[in-house]
Image (cartoon, rainbow, N blue to C red; front, side, top):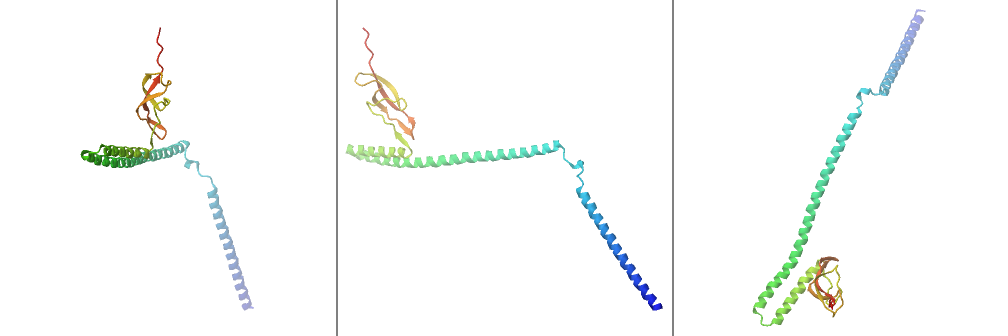
Amino acid sequence: MKKSSKKENMHSNEDNQKQAGNSGARNSGSSAKKADETTVSSENEPVSSGTEKSPEAVCKEENELLKDQLFRLAADFDNFRKRTVRQMEENRTAVLEQVLLDFVEVTDNFERALKSARTAEDMGSIVSGIEQLSKQFFSILEKYGLEKIICEKAGEFDPHKHEAVQHIETSEVPDNTIVDVYKQGYALKEKIVRPAMVSVAKSPEETEN
């Protein structure tokens, strides 16, 4: 009887411990759940209005940002302008250098022609050499787009291409006819660089009775 009573007491103590453990676990779980709920609740709470920026502060920040962007854009444009000017100047120098080199060749031929002319006895050879130099010179001008303006005696006067430096009264040719060409005219890619200098015919005035 005593042994049986001891066993029952032991089983009763074990049951009490299990119940206490389960109760503690439930209490612990409930505490953790409450803690989580408290955390979530605090996260969902709206931020205090004291941390929000005023409209004036927002406008000031935007103004500073726009000013910074404007200064950067102005600096970029200034660098672009300087780079473009420098590149244009380099291109101009390169083209000018090539033109001068082409004409240096003509200068060399002129010097050789002068040496030959001092000792030459045949004037025909001198004239032929000058003609060759003239052709070489104008071929360089044509290379860079310069063209002669068509202008001939007895041709029609064109005020867009010709410049009348003299009017000659004559009945041999119609009015507005080119009588003589004093200077050749030139055009650069269809743009008149220098008009031809010409004299133009004009009908003689009738003699008063």
